[in-house]
Length: 609
Picture 1 (cartoon, rainbow, N blue to C red):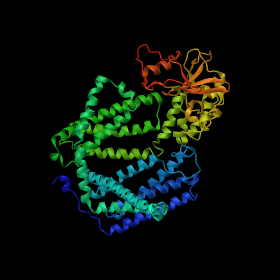
Picture 2: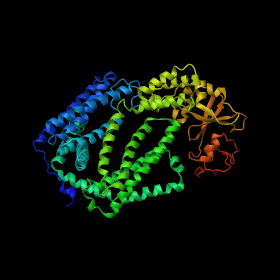
Picture 3: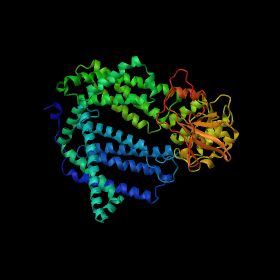
Picture 4: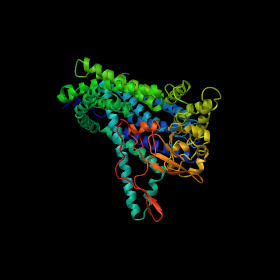
């Protein structure tokens, strides 16, 4: 029998606790239903969304913590934990709604007068944060001291993780069975069960009741939890040597390949963080609570020690990659979240590196590193959803500083980012920019900022009416010694596009989008056609007709071809006569379409045609 198995505690939960837990689950469902009904009836509107969000967070997360703690926490400890937890959840909900006031709603990217739900990021991080905190409080109760031993932290966290996973699966299966029953009855024209399942008064209590029941069953039968945990950890630990071989090989190859191929992916930081996380999870799957070192197979022991050394270089390279992006483009919400993840990765990497070299027994010093990192993670999870380290506020300040310092030109600045990801801080910044009346590019800044403030949707927006000056800012002419025809800029593209926005480049109807423009006479009539390319997409061809400029079609070019992109950036594009005439059938011309894939010319001496 392993040391972990010998540590399996007998359930200390009385079966009388079952009634209390199931009652809490039922009451939670009824409370959520009442909040939902109030929202449906219009009681919750944008003006009191903060209270709605606070109640929703508290009534979703707090009862689960209460159900888990019943029978384990002394009454005094229970309330000393749950009351501050409720206050923190409520404050997080209030702040999440406050920071979004005046900004588009997260689920539709548009403005609404209805009640606003907490953002998905807050939901995700609140669940993760309170899971970690609850596990740490449970370990402290188990040990009878404020800072528990690592063995208790491991026992509490893994037990909770498996319990919640089982409860979620159990609840999902319950719903699958109910839906199957409804489908069977519906086949014989009995729709009563289907109608009942569609009713919120049934759906909410059934879901929370099933979840509470599953939590109780897994709590009173700890052998199930420990058996599953042992199996999962053993299987994961045998993946560790494979991960070490692959990730170690990657690091060894970097001196020969250089970092440029890594930067070319534009996802280096995320990939390196993912690799670090995989190694950390697998190391802990092998380490467990630190008491089974002698029972671990030699390949896993060696692999874990090597893996502990690999995390730090991965985190350092990821930090360097992120610093390059921030230096070029400033902070964004995504980059700040990556930075917070890097703080955790660096703590873990440095600590594991130290543990691999200095542990008196096999990786024994991983234990205090994990405890320290958990406290750092909890602080960051709380700080980034509070005014302390709000990513939206920090990123807006960074983007504004980049613009004011001239590190990015006014016509290339991402005003839409401020509008749709900067929350209330971005809206305030746009209003400041819209009022700009002096200084370099003041006209451009004010015009672009006002256009961004007028937008209610980021994606799938209706075409905007863009005047000729604003359209000229959206289009960068690449062909040398050419200017866009005034008739092209003055055309009412909103009327031309109408409901067919998907056929046209966004730069013609969206103030926040830009295109490269090329003027080439493709028809040989002496009048140049206008070709527009958005990012690395196709070339949209526009021809001057009797009623103005019309979209003639697209020229497909490889989007990931460096020589072509470089040639277009320099305006090296010209017309060549067609090698084969069109076929005319019933008075309609049809052009030859080649089956061969788009080819990318060699880098040397390239001229795109």
